Length: 99
Image (cartoon, rainbow, N blue to C red; front, side, top):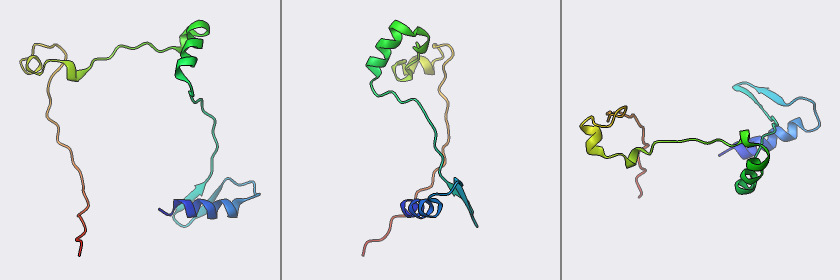
């Protein structure tokens, strides 16, 4: 909510300086830059990699759990697969009363 204002304030205070971070009573804030590879056209990139750099192509096989027959899983027929019961914890804020 306040991140935009805080970023603007921090940028103004640090403008022109060499420091990339600033210490506050509750911690440190700053800006970091990094470079990463972003695929903008996967089809074109895969086509180029298939012709020029085959080791850049990841080929994988995965199991689609929803396609497995549930009754066979329950009966223990499908090896390496079992149904497990899991308990999850969550918090949900109370709804505000509208008056």
